[in-house]
Length: 377
Image (cartoon, rainbow, N blue to C red; front, side, top):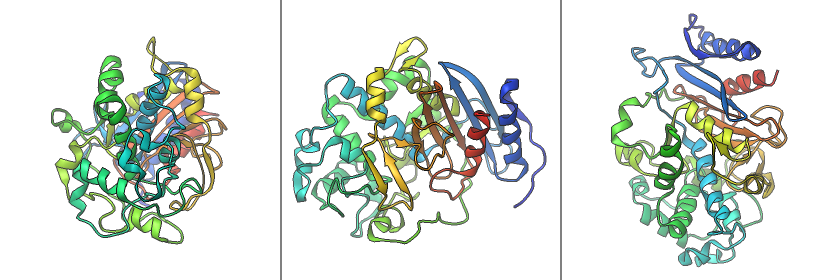
């Protein structure tokens, strides 16, 4: 482990969060960070906001208040919120079939798959087992058609198997067919713009200049025993756009992988979910729907991830792995490379961690785990 020099930390941390600031500084001192930000929102108020390091690999641009970081699968927390809002508005029911709003999805034995099964990774569509052009990921309709036609890789409802990319197309297509807008557009129009949140699903050209430059990990995550589902989800050469589509893919509103945010923006979203749905005086989701969205849908050994998982309706649940502190009711999502967003309704505490030096942990990156653990001291 390379050891870095002391770093200048911007933002603020009250005395009760002194241990968090110390842990944040230690991550940099250990050479584990390039640039990073960690924000906590308690009972609707930003109570801690720390940022340090660099937004570029040449270390010329500070990682500051307006720096956007790619948050990858932490975007799924936004998708889960937007689906929950449709349920809250009585436009959708978690228990109805996907095919009831997307008839083609009934193909190949998927007629009975429900919305909640699909967004809790039970549909058996973690990726495409047969080779395809990775560039196809920029064609929304083509990917949705392939998913609708695909036979499940296991009996739907029998187990979870993480759908790292495909669940965004599934949730996004369900949302589009019910609401008429993409999840990204609806989130921007209904939540991000009215409440001033710097969170984007799909990266507009006019904010791209604020995007932090990624430092990729030097190794693959540890997937455990590789099976066909893991290969289709993560390891096949066509399992993601994998940089081949470049700017075209960054523009796409794929609500499983294609989120860009400041830690403050993402923490405010999660802080609202931890605070009975209230965000700066407006309710973004009814308390009953927060509890329903966060309720466990399936628990057991995941068929793609090397963990026993508890999945809610699009959210990861904190138990049994506890990546986000001690709260048994905490829920949220982790993202490739280390980002995370979480809501603890018992403490009315929400938080988010973003960075641009990617680690290899699939869930529970050690850097935010230290910060979150120190938040509860």
